[in-house]
Each structure stands twice: as structure tokens, then as C-alpha cells.
Amino acid sequence: MCPATMPGMAHIYSSIQQALSAHWAAHDKKYPQKVILTPDQHQALNDMRATVSTGQPSKGPKPLAGEKFMGVLIEHDINTPGVMIGVDGVETPLQQPAATA
Image (cartoon, rainbow, N blue to C red; front, top):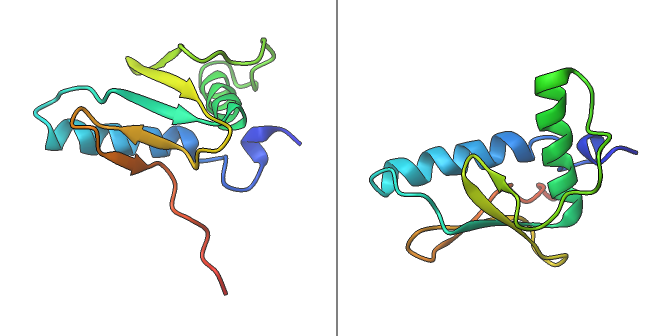
């Protein structure tokens, strides 16, 4: 299964965009320090970016930590839920946890 179609992965692209927009609005257009993603989340992000630009998911190599998205550094951590670290050091979750029944 492609990471972009895995539950919770499909919206990582828009989650990061929304978090960035909120951060810029709250911090006088200053960039956050970084985004921390799992390698699978990063792959889902790259797949979505490729799909938006070419209509096809990414077929390139696995994404590398140190890449940037909209000018923001991406780091990897296999234990992260996916967070953005603001200019002020505040950690903002990128995706809402799934609702429990």
C-alpha cells in the first residue's frame, strides 16, 4: 500500500500547509524551526507533492532528512506523531489523533 493512501497519511501535505499558515500568522511571518516526520510521513508528503505536480506518485528514492518543504527543514524521527517546531520552540501536532469509539 502506498503511504499516501495509508490511514492518517493522505493529508500530511495539507496538515503541514495549515500549520505553516497558522504559524506565519501568529509569528509575524517568521518560519518555524523545522518539521519532524516519520520516514513514511515524509514519503507520503513527497508522493502528494509529486501527484500535485505530475499526476503520479513519487517514484524516486526514499526521502532524506534535511530536505525542505516550503522553506522549512524536515527531520526524521520514527517515534514522532508528526510535529512542527515553531520559531519559539513550541511543538504543534500536524495531524489530529484518530477519534476513539
